[in-house]
Image 1 (cartoon, one colour):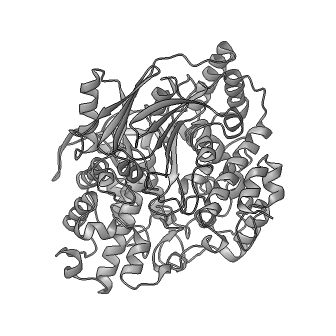
Image 2: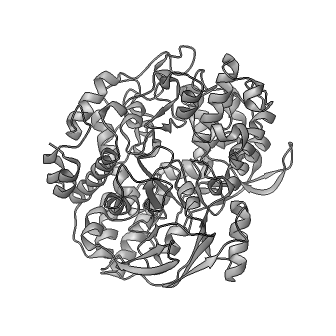
Length: 615
């Protein structure tokens, strides 16, 4: 199999056994890699009765199809599982170097099954996999874990995906962390890894991937590299990173503030990407093979927390751990909060939103010092926010309440479920659907729950689309977004499975050139975009198999309340218009939410249609 190694590593943790399994070639051709291919494997292995934290729930980690090659900005790798947080389909993807090294160890992915009786980690080097004891690592944070494994392996270039104390203690939205703050986040993949007593997976690969035509690949990759370098979006991302959006979020009203009740705080500009670049930046870091180099290296000599050299937080984290709790952060405190979350290893979006909800309930008088263990959760109380993060990371005290998320918090305190700012159990990210109506449709329909990475809606309507997709900026408050959302969701399902960064604008001709030269498929763009739709519809079918129906495709009432005095200007998305139009395009049943039998069969998935009883 050119472009693949043709095998997976199977870790039967209950038996303490590692083995190789041939890659399903049909699955690989139809679902490509990363979260697409992994979701197809997961479909066969779970159902509604599967306990997310039991031995029968697998954790599947896979590199993207183009990982480990000389293609530009194709470092993304992914993981899937039945989420312990939401109870249905969960996935995540991540950058950095782990995916490239995993691919170059000679494996197309790893499936973790069963549960180990004691802490272990897996070490793979150039086709040889070992199961090692991790008792001495259990309880250590994600940074110390990586440091000690590299020392034990005797190679500082070993790439590690690990969990921290949050996932060890089964905080439901625990992350799998890699390098400095790169994470498989949101859906609780780290929590599943913790339930299996797997502390880490360490990889070091230098094997040469088999390709159909290496010379043609190199030429297509070279041209693609130049295109990415010259892209205007790449240049913007290089200068300010994702944190640069903070300054845009303020006038758009896009950064949720005081638990989605207020316009974005003007003070947030103190921790924006522009401020980082002007006052604190000393350099950049990049993911494998990426010329954009969007991540910031900062030096902080002032403030309560000082750092000689540290990577700066991303946009979502800055808003979730700042404005969401009404915090007027300086850069020192913002970086410190981010570092705490990364070291404990949990999702900053769900963590920040859950903390914000706690502040909101405290302000209403629904909870008191008695509930919080003495913490005074008044808007803007930074010290209380820091203590909450510690409790959350340890899954202790009031932190254990937050670790369950906003939906469980609403249930615990007798509040309306519509007050929990989530869809399908997953908190709404830091792009407000009242600022960009397309995002309301994205959140309501994305397979794992509220997910800003499953579509480029806010980017398109703020002026950035993909040149070859025909997506152009429109009125951000218009409600004719169904076609744009469907098309961008399909595209992102495709690029996630290829391992391609969202910020890399690679012309379709060059993307095709790399794929065909690697695999020898002789595919075209229509077939690739159909693969993107196939992956998205599969993930939807898997969500339906695990209990999701049309009634779950809703936005909570709380984020449908207009905020007049901000960049939102009182607008709210018209879901009654957008959802039926979207359902018609997707060919989903209006009651069950299932893709139709005809649509699934047209995508080559008759067995999936039969398994969910599609009509």
